[in-house]
Length: 132
Image (cartoon, rainbow, N blue to C red; front, side):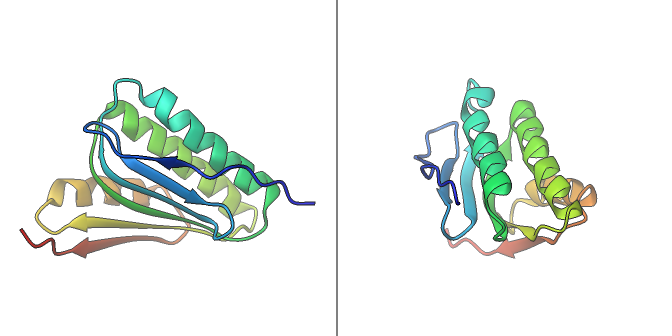
C-alpha cells in the first residue's frame, strides 16, 4: 500500500526559495534565494517530505534546483537532503539532482560543484542564460 502525503507548495519570499513537490512525479523543485530567518523551520518540512517519499515509494526521486544564493544554515539543510539521497542511492534507489544556475553566477556553480563532489548519484550542474 502506498502512503501519499500532501505536496509542498511554498511560495518564494524575499529570503526563502519557492519549493514545490510532486509526489506522483517523484519531483522536488526549489528556486530562488535561501537565507530565511529560520531555515530549520523551512527545510524540516522538505526533509520530512524526502524521507517519507524514499520510505514509501520505489519510484525515482529527482531534485530540480535553481537556487541563487544560500546562507550557511541553508547549505547545512541542503547537505542533509543530499545525504538522504546518497543513502537511498547506496541501497539501489534511483535519485538524481539537476542544478541550474545563471551563467553570470559562478559562485553558485562552485557551491553546486562542492555538493556534487560528495555525491555518487547523478548530479548535473547546468548553466542557463538569463536575459536581462
